[in-house]
Length: 157
Image 1 (cartoon, rainbow, N blue to C red):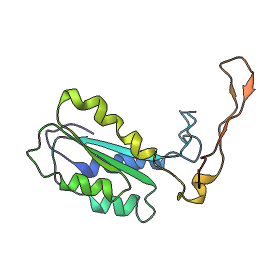
Image 2 (image 1 turned 180 degrees about the horizontal axis):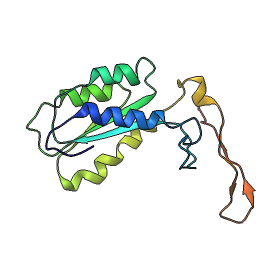
Image 3 (image 1 turned 30 degrees about the vertical axis):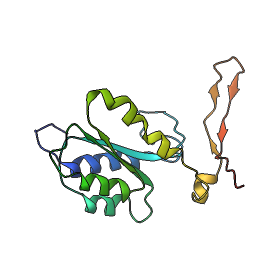
């Protein structure tokens, strides 16, 4: 991608979805990488200062109907443009829309997505409720080789 002074959401989202599709369940499938990932939440965070394209065709191709990737959109700076497409993209893909009005608001606004991700997963699909295992790794505290399993815990009361 090359910056040209214009907004091209389509190229950006296609690139992001292609990168996420290259990640297999549990590890990056690319041979040059051995990064282990939990794969609990796949998401795209888009920061923009303008643009009015909804790129619905990209979401239809890559993310719908299952919506396995959540899209969070951030409007940066003063609004001299319509933010409705940004709100639509986030809501249509199980994400959230945020406004960052000034440089002083960057930290608090970029961390608010954690509140959205932290909402209860009790209604999540069966795949989210399965144990996710890491590869064997050396424990940092000197316990030797270990394997870690994670599982969401739900309070149904």
